[in-house]
Length: 158
Image 1 (tube, one colour):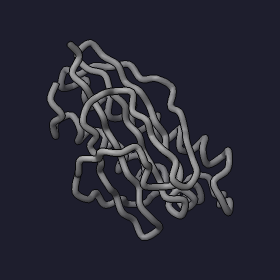
Image 2 (image 1 turned 45 degrees about the horizontal axis):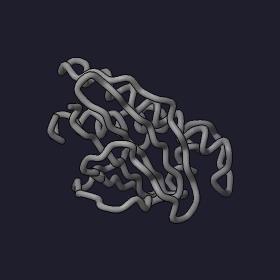
Image 3 (image 1 turned 30 degrees about the horizontal axis):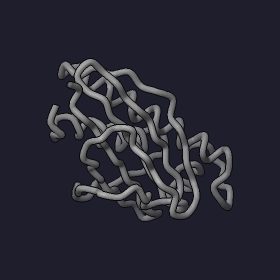
Image 4 (image 1 turned 120 degrees about the vertical axis):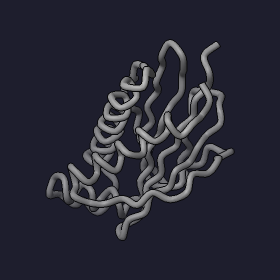
C-alpha cells in the first residue's frame, strides 16, 4: 500500500477531532514532510504499532511540554509544572483515541489493522523508533500553546 493521503488523512483528522472534542482546542495542521531521523521534535511522544493483512506500521504523536500541559489543564483541570506520570498516561490515552478514530475512518475504505498498546517516551531529545521500514511522514500542528507532531511510518506487507 503506497503512503497516500487517503491513508494519512484519517490520523490527522482524528487528532484534530480528539483535541477539539476533549480539550476544546484547535490544532492547525502544517505541511507534511519526509523525516529521515529518529529524534522527536517535542517533549513527550505516544507510539503505537499497527498490523493488518495489507500493511504494518506505526504512528507517533509528539507534544511540546507547553501544549500537552495546556491540553491536560483543559481536559482534566490539572496543570502540573512538568511532564509527570499523569501527563504520560494522558499522552497514551490520546494516542489510543486518535488511532481508534483513524481505524474507524479507514475501515470504511477497506483498510483494516489491529492496534498495539501505546508506548510513551518523554524527555528532551528523546528518540522514536518506528517498527516499520518505510518512509516516515511528519505532520506538524501548531497552537498558541505549542506544537504537536504526528509521524506515520508504513511498509507494504508482502
